[in-house]
Image 1 (cartoon, rainbow, N blue to C red):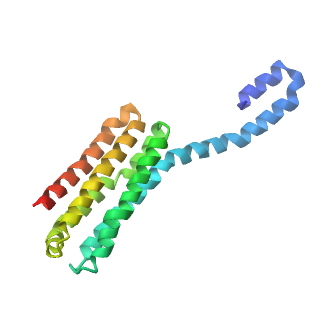
Image 2: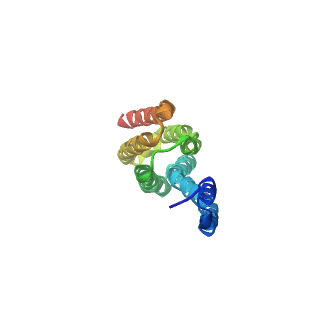
Image 3: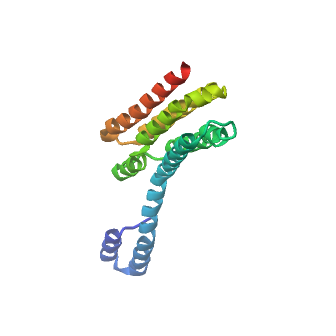
Amino acid sequence: MLYTVDTARLLAQTYPNTTALTASAMKLTTLIAPLALVATAFAQGAIELPLTAVNKQTLELRQAVETWKGDLLGTIPILKSNTNIILVSIKKGTKAAQDSQPLDFLGALGVAVATKSLPQSVNTTLTALVTGKPKFDKLLLSPAILINLGLQKSATAEMSKAILEKIPAYLRSIAEELIRLIDVAFELAIRRFHF
């Protein structure tokens, strides 16, 4: 049983013969309380880490597309990022959210901070992909990009749903707006790659 300092003092006052037990409980509480806070922060941070990775990898994909000269060899980092790395991080984010306890205000705030730039990163990266579409067309790679966009959109929707379920109800409308911005960006990019 974990005693708080107040509980331990109350026990000492009520049962004076248990001062050794009370002192031990107070020491144990002093040691365990910070560990509990760290464990809580770590558990809530488990969602933030994959989101931060997705944002970073999305920006790396954008840079790879923007610096690509249109040659076949230059598509390797683009296709690698587009198919494997980002999808793995999205799936890790989904798993972390599914395994997470419901977030409190601070946990939701941490997720919000981790995702604040994600809609813009996704939008600019998808814009770079659409801008590079003529080069992908020339190498007959547009269908591969389209398939990857569909996979990422689906995985992102699954991750968003898992995270949304953990956000406190009074903050869900804000999270839903961020999700909507990302979804719209995917829809526009997919539509462009269909033609």
